[in-house]
Length: 110
Length: 115
Image (cartoon, rainbow over all chains, first blue to last red; front, side, top):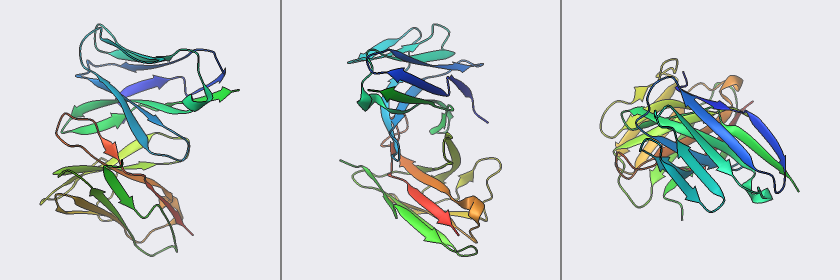
């Protein structure tokens, strides 16, 4: 089954509002990756976090990895319609494979 | 540009027939590829790990005799859905990575509809 729990499942926001999705694990993660999947598309890699307490930014996107390496978050500031899609966190339990969280579907109302 | 190519993009087949899906790494060699399945509004579920030159490793609950995986070369893995049934209708996506710790690159996916 899934190793990481991701919430919320859905998020509807007005354009310009902020958005955050969270991932939590009961076990310590070696690293966590974030992907975005546009409607009808395939997942696209956004970022990988490895270090405890790590914070990385990509323009309006801020990614955090918890101090205990058991949780992570993705925050989007001032959402735009181009941000629409499903955001997945994913962990690597070993063997090179990637296990995805349930995903958060973001819709943005213009 | 795309680094992983998947074909076909969509396929409609009749119940009981078999469907083959190809996944190619375009500009790198992939000793390992991964096959995922995604039902509407759900997450990607790992089906199996495809290993070049050896048997695939299937996740718990995935029937290896129904989902045949062949990784005959360092750039090609195929997934064959045998004796397809309507409940096999789904979005199948392959992925590959340049090296063990690098992120996954996904193919565009194959939307399978079994009638």
